[in-house]
Image (cartoon, rainbow, N blue to C red; front, side, top):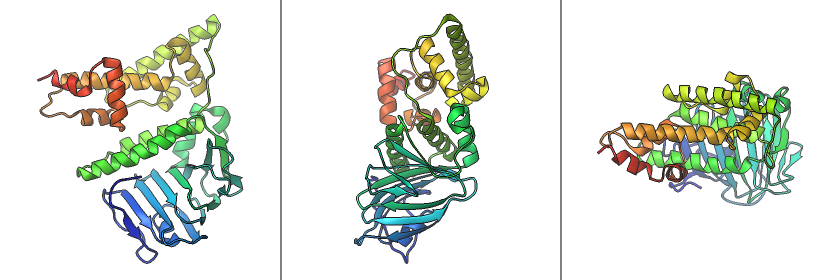
Length: 337
């Protein structure tokens, strides 16, 4: 939950402005106002249980990407249709009474995909927390198809439910993104929407295409040779992108190398004993270190450099950095004094 003072939004007032250009944190007192605060979707909301306050809603509008988290105080029903080239990835706290069209929340790992031009009928019980991220469907599905062709070659044309091994990461990330946006707003700063959209998309893609890897992966010589070749090409691509001040993603690697995420994952486990995501993060940490060592602390901050390379959760970033380099990023920057 954000710590900023909350707006109280009524049906008459509609969606009011809030701290931060595209950040809102509002205690909502009518279901109609809850719908009005999500203008990117044609939707009606109906309050179905007693309560003066309907929900607490936190949202971050990044243009083609939206992040929404709702703590429901009263039971509501949401009825609407997604627009063209618009899709969502969502989850809810496990509650047997929750329903998204003809799907129930049948496990704590349930994730829901609502494609473009799709009618939805959602029943959200009081006490439930829900969250979703929305994207351009063409961009999202195009990237998901690269990462997991088998699952996303022909995306569903109706609401889809699946279980993801990466849902915990998405839940944590949504809290991080909203908190980071709030902290930036308090400092009078704005986050780069393009950087944020890329980070949000990649996290949602990992959630939508995740599969588990159990135990040590072994491979015959021919497969291992292929793994080495894939990983060397991936490493060269990552280094080239970072040298050009770009933050490459797993999608970028898969598209450049013409391999699926599964093939890339197996290759990296054979090659370096870690996932491509972990490897990519390690590369970015190294690039941050090189940048800090080359900059003057008089005109550079650790936060600026960390965010330049896509690190928004500064606490986790600092911990990972110190674990690898055995000093804090601030200590690295002070070396230039």
